[in-house]
Length: 359
Ligand code: OSB
Ligand code: MG
Image (cartoon, rainbow, N blue to C red; front, side, top):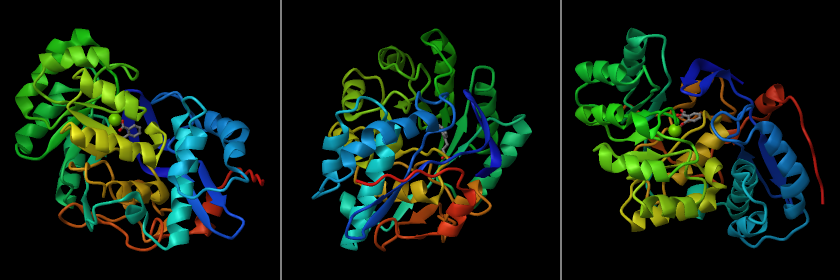
């Protein structure tokens, strides 16, 4: 699907995204859908739509097909024999959570054990822009739209000057930066200069698979480090917190193996007074709604990267799309499952390839 904007990060730029959807069916007619967060290339994390297709077809689907599940939580027990491949597992697991929610006539939020909040706080993630005036224009649009915090992407050479420009014009907005692993510990001096801009956090400054270096950086800077790429499991979250590698965690179900692991991580973090928020992966409305429901768990105390469908797509795959009110909040759907209709004719129109497996 084409994106309405070019999204550039320190690891590359995209103008469209391919989505792998997993739909599961039971013999008695229940169904659910999951969206995979993988991209076509392995620049954010190692998985790609190609590896996800292979791992689901050859390893994960055979573990699921023909089995009886009493609860969505059981899914993880079956899938956990496979090491890694969190995005592949998460896509299937999300479909099974949605299936249970649909079958029980419950919202995904209720099934997950959400705290009943009717609204979640929305933030927005702005990619690297051509120049500072272009960035300022984008920030102004999103602030005017009501988003409760602004995140901008940074990389060496396009960092302090961007934040400086934004702070001049918007001294009080909630602001943060995401480096997507573009720095090393040798940049600690430069990263310390962000401390003058009262940022909420700096997301994933160092290597995608590191926590040790982050634990050495954190005492050298006042801005809290938020980990994204490095947190691929509840165990990783616990270790990172234990060694002081982060003060905040970005939870993406796709990155941590699914919704159950997301729930575990928010519980671990809440226990240790570490705030969490829900990241985004440019999802269609399907994955986006799952993120909305996930953010009703009690540990989610900060605005996430879930923003309006209309920012991303001319026409989303769901009706109505996810919308954000003028105070930057998203209503949590109350209906069964994801709570908005999936428009299958649109899915069909965009479908490049389909595989069907039966028990
Ligand atoms: O690092 O959070 C990230 C998008 C793709 C890959 C990684 C990231 C992102 C975003 C976009 O920041 C969040 C969104 O708008 O969905
Ligand atoms: Mg990030």
